[in-house]
Image (cartoon, rainbow, N blue to C red; front, side):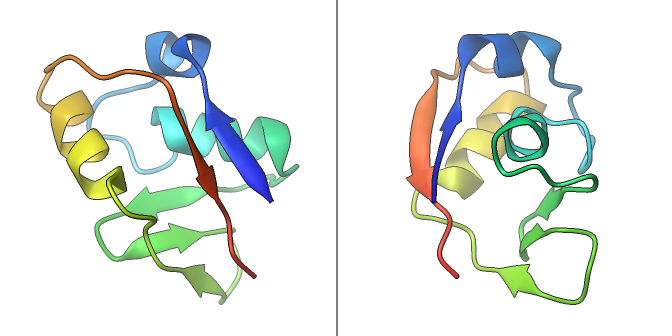
Length: 79
């Protein structure tokens, strides 16, 4: 499934939050997840299953959390 993190997700995202960051907001909206949890260990949908971080996402998260410029991007959610 392709997930698009938009500028709207970035603008609404909360720095330092694993559940309200731009990626989590995109997953809730586009994948229909009620709970989305994203950290350096992976992406979790509120259940036991954990997905590995797609390439480049750790850097996006680091930059976002540290108020550095980030841009919208897409990633494939495997599984």
